[in-house]
Image (cartoon, rainbow, N blue to C red):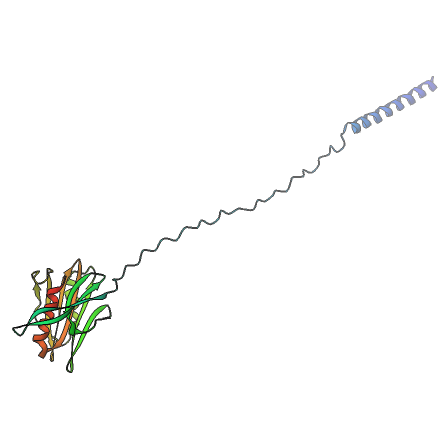
Length: 229
């Protein structure tokens, strides 16, 4: 009986050990291989290079057009002809040459004896020798300038040491254009200017000649002024 109990106890112990082993094995078998948490292999974030939008090239602002300077004054020589004139109360025939101021198409005649014109500092200039003296007539066009402004500017040339006459108006009966005149004297020379309003521009004519040639040059100036077209 005791033997039987000892044997029974031994069987029970063996059975308990077997069950314990089976349970442990089952738990191990139920665990999937690789079930242990694997570190997540996140794909490295691909840094997309920042694609900066190309700098917008703003076209350069157009520069304002430069103020147009006055057109270069020139002169075209035309035909020569003979006209009747009056010098010191006597009628005479004299030779004159036709000229055109370009690009303004201002026409006039001038004594051929006044010589060939030159362009100096934006002016068309005529000079002739009179003994030891020189007679000079110059033409200039002031674009868009009023007659009053042109007169004020012309007067500045005679501001120092000249004896001035009073300025006077020129009627349209002379050549069809309204104008102004002013004379000056310095030592033994007569000086002066004429300004005419021609096609919204100011035509400025300066003269100088020896006082003793006043009558002859007075006729030369009158012929020229009367012929302006």
